[in-house]
Amino acid sequence: MLSASSLLAACGGHAAQTAPRLPKSDAAQLIALAQTVAQNAGGDGCTARGEIDALGAKARELVAAGGVPLRLRAPLLDGVAALAADAPACAPAPPPGKHDKPPKPHHDHGHHGGD
Image (cartoon, rainbow, N blue to C red):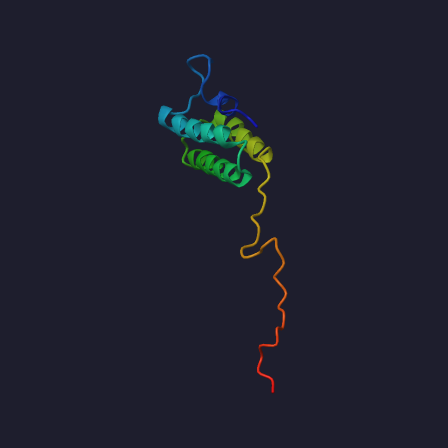
């Protein structure tokens, strides 16, 4: 999985002063989401996918609002897409109410009214 620093490398970095930059508050939001993804990537795949979806949604929101400079848009969205493509699989939960043991057979002990 991509690290938070590689995902957002184009959004800051060591370039010249005239290089486009993300506003600090926007970059902080993306970094926080990316760090959450990185911390939880090895755990539950469904949780990781949800966090990656949240990161992608925030990135698209910032791009749509014009908060991401033009030269940074493609690297940011491409990085998020690469992260999503590398996300762990989300295993479906077992169906509710299913048990591993088969039901016990019903035995007729002659307790049903007869004669």
